[in-house]
Image: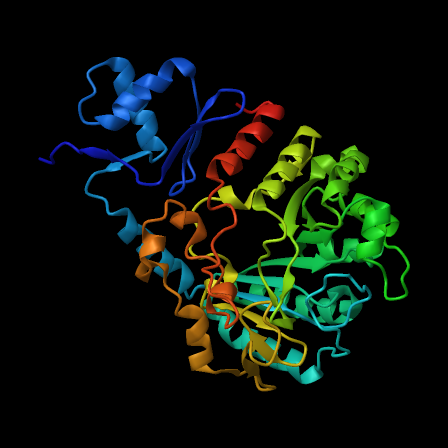
Length: 445
C-alpha cells in the first residue's frame, strides 16, 4: 500500500499584492496564476508553512487548489532535475524542425535603428533546390515542421515564398507531417491579394508587423528607401489582415528614447478593430556596441525594462491586448536558438543559429545544392553548449523556468560578459500584475 504523499512549497512560488490590494499568486514552473480572496490569504500562508498538517476543511480545500497550481508539490520532487530533464527533451527533440528562412537580405525600408547591413542578395536557385531536397528526405521522420519567413523584407521575394511554401505543404501532406508557418514583415507590401494568398493558400497564420508610434514618429523611424512615410499604408494593410479571423497578429513596437513618449498617443489613435485583434509587443531597440558599432547586441541599458512594463500597463488600460512573453509558461530554452533542430537559412545558403548574428563569424555552416547540411560542429557546439544548470546563479534563480539561462547571443558574444538574463528578471511582480490587469479589464477573474 502506497504511503500518503507529503507536500512542500515549490521554490518557484511568487505571492504579492497588486496595486488595488488584491493578492496574487504565480508559479514560474507551472505558469499557475491565481487571484486570492482576502479572507483566504492568511489560511493559504498557514497551509504553505505546514502543508502536511491541515486540520480544517477549508485548509484542505485550499491545499488541493495549491496542488493543482503546483504551488505545492510532492516533497520527493527535485524541481531542478525536472527542469533539466524538460530542457534536454525539449532542446534536443528529433520529431520537429524549425527553419527561419530569409529569401533576401534586401529591404524596401531604411529604418533608423536596423541592425542588418543592407545587401542585394536574393535566394539562389541552388539554395531553394537544396533546401527542398533536404525537407523531402527528412520530413518523414518529423511530426512537425515550422517555417518562419524573415528578412530583409521577405515579401520582396513573394514568388520565392510561394514556390517554397507550396512545395513544403505538399511534402508535409505526403509524410503526414504537421506544417505551420509565420512571417515577420514590415507590412508595407501586404495588399489584399497578398494577404489572401499567404493565409488561404500558403497556410501562414502568424504575422509580426512593426509600427513604432503615431504617423509622424513612425514615418521618421521606418520610411521607405526614398524617404516616403509608410504608416498609413501599413495601418490599412493591418485592418485588412484583421478581417481574417484565423490569423494571429503580433504588432511589434520598438522603443527607445526617441519615441517612448509618443506611445500613449499612438495607442489612442489605434483603431478599436485592431485593439481587439492584435497583441502589442513592446521591445527595446537593439543598439550597437560602443566598442564595435558594426555588431549589434540583444539588449540595451538605454531604456529601463520598468518603462516597458509601464507601457504595457498603459496599453491594457487603453483597451489593447499585449503579448506577455514573461508569463508564457515553462520554456525549454530562452528562445528557438537554444534548440538543436532550429536553423536560420540565409539567401546565400549560409546557416545561422540567430537572426542577430548574420555575419561570417555567426555562420555555422551552409546548405548544399544536393540537400546536405554542412554544419561546423565546433561552431554549433558553441551555441548549444550553454547550460544554465552548470551556473550557480541560474540554479538559485527563481525565474529559471522562464529564462532558462538567458540569451545565448549575449552570453557567448565576445563583446559581452553578461548572462543575457530576461529583462524582467527583477520585475516579476510587475510582469505578473499585467496578467491580472488584462483579465480584470476584460472581465476574466
